[in-house]
Image 1 (tube, rainbow, N blue to C red):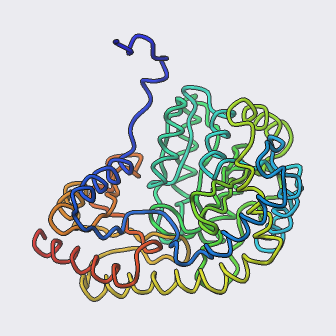
Image 2: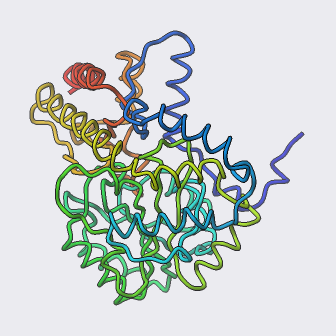
Length: 405
């Protein structure tokens, strides 16, 4: 069969993910018995998740709650939405109603739903440059034209953002929203300063633009200081939030949420119902009990975060030891560090050779960029590997770096 003639016109916008290609190649090598050190994944460490506690909780829920294997309302368990509203009020200073929360299949599902409801083909969407590759692909597959604004150690450069907006408007294009990961940004790891957050809100207000705040890494903060989400600073209802417990419970649970109001909330829920009807019921009950019983404080804040902080510090120390003088980001939140090779280096080629010759898996940075910049960037993950793997992986990376540059 030749299937091409049956495809929808929008299928021509669908492209593969470079991140998926890296993981596919790594899987092929492992299937041939090649031992790899992965500094590529965006997962939490299974050893820092209380899996035995979650296992007991799962059995208790399945035995005691018959509804745990049935559908829930499309917007999620009412008790879970109530619990998340209180959780966000306590830890994020976000005052939201349970009625404004829609439980989704992870943060990815939340972003997909918002894109479906907001984007018409040809609309312009502004993102950070670089930004999370799979979100960029999701918006492009809906027909959006993605325009990137550079980031530095304080987050999105708001002066450049304002210039970009004025140019888009002057061209007569329709600008729908600004997408940002302000805390522990993926892939750079940078966290937007409060000054930039306030400037971003002012710019969005002036030009009447929505902001989608991706809060995926808000619970992966390593400094004892308040970092207010954009939503907590929003006085107009302009910020739409996508959140997730994937970095707390584990990425496989697929419990996320949208915080939206009015017609936008209603349309997201209408769009969601025929797609998945509801997020996984058993995962919703596990999330509910995890939060209700104080396990977030007991296990994530007291065990998980200190463990991730140690790994972050170990990666930074290894980079300083083995690659003195190299440029890289220093995160205060999230899971990632961006390493920059010399200016004219090819990060794609370097990542490929590093995997094949040294057995170390990293993600090239270029696919995260909305333009031709970032060719020399490499994304490193510190949350999943052990401290020993981090040290060995950076040492081997440095060996190839010195051979090539």
